[in-house]
Amino acid sequence: MTEMSYLDGNMLDGPMRELLTVDLSSAVGRCENCGMTGSMASLHVYSHAPGLVGRCPSCEEVMVRLVRGPDRAWLDMRGTTFLQVPMPMEQPFPGPL
Amino acid sequence: MGIVSPGFQGRPRTQEPALPPGQYLTEDFPVLSAGPTPRVSLDTWEFVISAENGSEHRWSWQELMALPQETPMVDIHCVTRWSKLGTNWQGVSVDTLLDGVDTGAHFALAHSYGGYTTNLPLDDLRGGQAWVVHTFDGAPLPAEHGGPARLLVPHLYFWKSAKWVRGLRLKTMDEPGFWETAGYHDYGDPWREQRYQGD
Ligand SMILES: [Zn+2]
Image 1: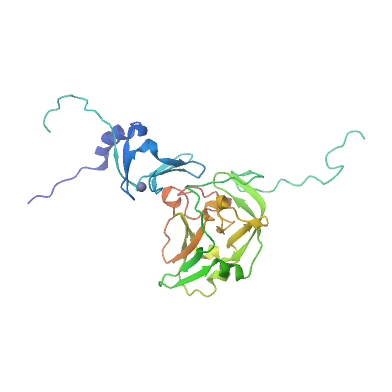
Image 2: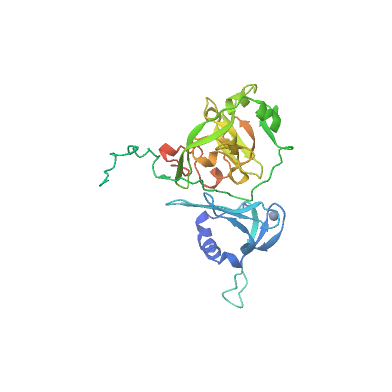
């Protein structure tokens, strides 16, 4: 048996860049706490705070935290199980992988 | 009367009070909140210190009010850059609450109604440096400022002074809290401008 080899994190750069530049308001997220799935645009965002806190409109648990420092930023999405973003295929008829 | 030069009449101009670096003086009391304001009934309110060995010490509202009360007047410094000087509080020293607690822990995680948490070294909650306060400027602490009771640890940035505080978990290891897991400093000394991780 042979071990599956892995690639280093650099290979995520392109796919992540493609994903993270989407308009978040068009994305759908699943709340890790209650399981509700809905538009990220429907989150309740608290901004009079040291960072931005996005909460599930159903259970009020934290789904997103975004902190902006002068030269760094932090994103914590552990309260979001997944983010589903619209991403049409660039080629209408992709070849087999 | 003619022209009055400053200092000639009335109170002499006081020196601009020293503020920690990067802070601005405010006269009002901004409300910061990372979530909906919990409404906690005094009938069910409790404060719990859980030691690292699992033992728990609980106080009801009546029991808290029956403890010796202190009236700290302190300066507070918010990491969002406002500072407010000479604020007046009433509450119970954390020393008093820790009095009967047998612990060898070096850290505490303060936790609140509504789910907020923040971590502090236990030594910073001792020695007359920290209180559980329920009164501000002679009136019951409003819910938007953390009432019925909040932690007050004025020598650290104000996010360490957990609103709606419900208890302290004493820990042998430092466990970062709500803002500390999202980039903010684990200690948060305003005089050393420890705003973010690594500062
Ligand atoms: Zn939820």
